[in-house]
Amino acid sequence: MTIKSENTPTLVIFFNDWEVFPQGINAGGGESATLCLAKALAALGRRVIACANLPGGECTFGGIEFWNFGPNYDIHLIEKRLREIGPYCAIAATLAHPFLLLREHQHCLVRVIINHSPSSTASGLDPSTVFNMIDRMICVSEAQRESVLTCSSRPEMMTVIRNGFDPQVFPYSGPEGRNWRKLIFIGRIEAAKGVHVLVDAFQELKRRFQDIELAIYGNISGWPDMMKLKPSLEKGLPGLKFMGKASQAELSLQLRRAGLLIFPSIAFESAGLVVLDAQASGCPVAAFDVGGVAEYLQDGVCGTLIREHTAAALAAATIKLLTDTDRLRQYSINCQSAVQHYTWRETTNAVLRLVDELTSNNARKSSEDPTYTLLLTNKALRHTVDFEGIVLEQLLDDHCAIGEGRAIAAQEISRLLAYKPHLPEVHLWQGLQYEIQGAKQDAIAAFKRSCSLSKPNDWQPFFRLVMLQSETGEYQSAAINAAEVLKRVPNFPMRGSLENIIASVTGQFAQ
Image (cartoon, rainbow, N blue to C red; front, side):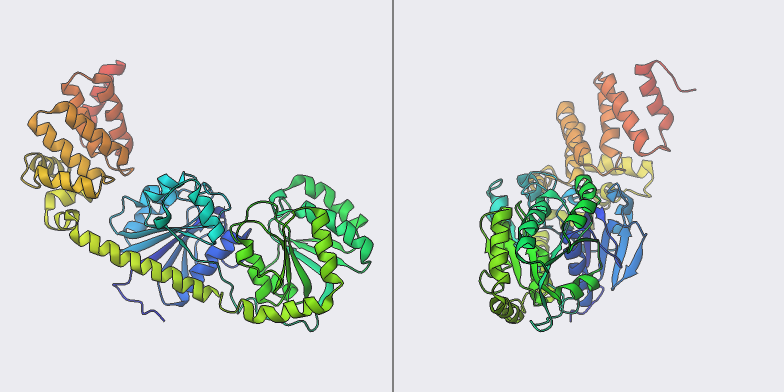
């Protein structure tokens, strides 16, 4: 077990924007996988904070602190709390959006994204953009890695770590007592998952096996057309039943009883988590060969991979299996040894090794990076980074010290820009020195770069622009930046002066 100490960075995990129920039923594989990873990390003794859309509110469960960013993915709501937890490593599930904010956090030691999505750009940004914000992308299959590589030639930025299963939730059960005529589907009920293909195949199966059953587990509400068809399908095909969402415990029970899991996804799958859960439970699998599924299912050992993605091919493959129960029994027996090493404990250890390696590498780079020493030793520089609670007069004095070169030399700023071009304060420092030198247009350009990278509450580069643009006669721009300062700090000490600058353009002077 990992020993938790004050020097061990906290692990902050960001779910995507789907609803998350720490103690309930979750919508899909990505949410379930992220939750399993968080639980396994907490079980190793690490402090784990999970940030998610929590309809039930914040809680602590399974050793995990759940923080709520709400249904609108308002990550800024928890930013202040993140700044107060000390050093931490950030892991985001699929979406890259947290790193747009976290790249400005000095205490965020490592940034890793785990890509659960079938799409190479489902992070919300092009991979080449994402790679500039993170230390590593974890892909859950080689197929997914190859998909991302079609959009970006950065193989060194990707590591493949496969998903796992929880042996306590999905214990193995052999062939004894299984109903070989009972088929089961588990997943989101949507067109991409091929549920309609499965239903079409079941009609053919029903003509061949009168006693066959098909239980479909998953939320149907996201597919209105299928909801309308549900009553007639269940009535016209005895044995077919849409079961709705179910708990992990219920799914585990059904996988220990079923004869065959059907995974008919017709779209690219990054992995197919339920394929692994089924094998762990001793349930053979029939799956379409899409994306990374072949990396989770050994064809001819624990089930069958179907190359043609049609209802006819699915029906034919299933008939072949159901008429050979000896093969199904052997598949069930094979499952016990085939997947026993693919536990979440093993997956988590691999993730943790990667995170700790990146932390160590980044710490070494930081010790070589002038930013590290300068921010710790120079008060004026430190104030421009951590400016909360610093009075305006003090900050302006600090700006003067920086501009005059008393806090940092121009050469050091150039070196810092080579190391850390994304830090807004470095561009601010450069602008201050240009301003003192009388290079006003260069200063304005530097302040604008700082503005584009600034934190939501950082008014400094906007204020410098107001003063410079007022001097150079750019009154419209000065008024716009004055309004931005007041938007960011409504009670700004020089509010009256800024309002008058705005009024000089709008014609409405402050009283």
